[in-house]
Image 1 (cartoon, helix red, strand yellow):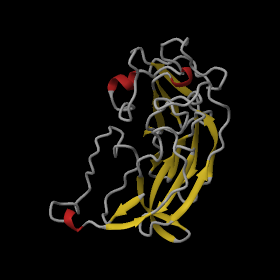
Image 2 (image 1 turned 180 degrees about the vertical axis):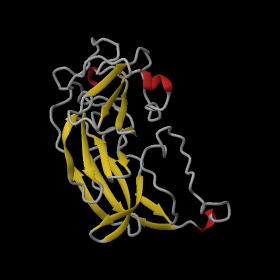
Image 3 (image 1 turned 120 degrees about the vertical axis):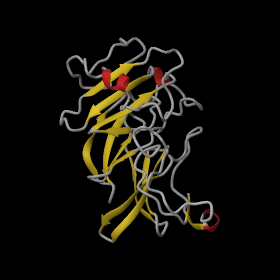
Image 4 (image 1 turned 135 degrees about the horizontal axis):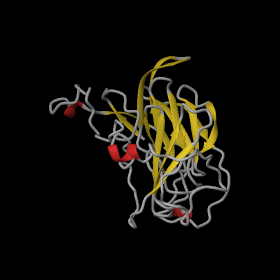
Length: 254
């Protein structure tokens, strides 16, 4: 991993915001004149084993993080071998890393479309400085950005060894999508209300044969996406026994 000398606003989700606009609205230092002054500040080899085409997620950045060593700008990446790593943006030194324990085994052998690995980009809740990351067994983890400690017990979010895409966080609800029928999991959209202590999961199965895939798909600000959960039925707790499968109904459920 390499870093160049540049300062920008926080980048706490894939695409910079829930709408995935990739627009750094507060960026003012990068201009056509200043670009030529950019230089390599540091490089760092991270302890992660690549899986098929997967290695490290794109970095997230959170500035002004209060740590025992003062204020830090933290760069966060997740690794395909179910690791999360936090780096000091100023020094390039590793602040902490965490290897997540995985339960279960995949039903199919890994290949380039279905690597059986961590695939979804994490998201950082800016206020409490909590990192949400989905491990390869489909469990959602909440980690303290300062030290990597768990802030809640892992909870099943989607079926194990599916292919999820970037996590999205809006108004206390976290979203992801799955695609490409990895380990028999149909394309769909998953949502969890983090304000609900029971952590119930809502699910909508996509009806298109091509699948709902790509990091920009979980955009809950869209009216259609919001409507999927308004007429929901009685809540359900997602477990390995009742995770949606190819034979599951395509109607919205919670």
